[in-house]
Image (tube, rainbow, N blue to C red):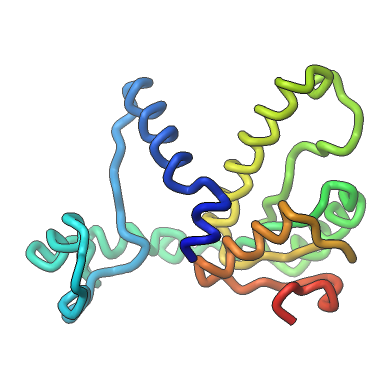
Length: 185
């Protein structure tokens, strides 16, 4: 997991996001990725200060408002959310997968920009590289939001491989339109 976090620039991206939010006057709240339960962190040799506080205060304990906050999608009775990943060279296939997933009753999120096709937004190489970095971070947010990942296409490049590894590090199920390209198969 450390390798994936390093490759994705996780800590730098988190620091930048927090700094930007605070600079804009947005309140920042940290919430654990799971509900606290008795026994959590008690056998850990090096819990961080937040984890030690969770043990003492039982913040985000199952059955409390914080515990319910974590499962708000369930409380809202939202259908499953699937994020489509893959090379943007497969945008046509992504749109087709979007139709199938929507017909199956799922909320679909997918790349909103095709970085492979010419467009004035990408005419300046420096600006295009910065845009790609922002879009990569946005797509990681979509992965965090989603309940599962659908990888579209018969080719897996470095970006898609990193997205798959990131999703799996979060425990997200990953499906493939072409299972033979699964890097872990």
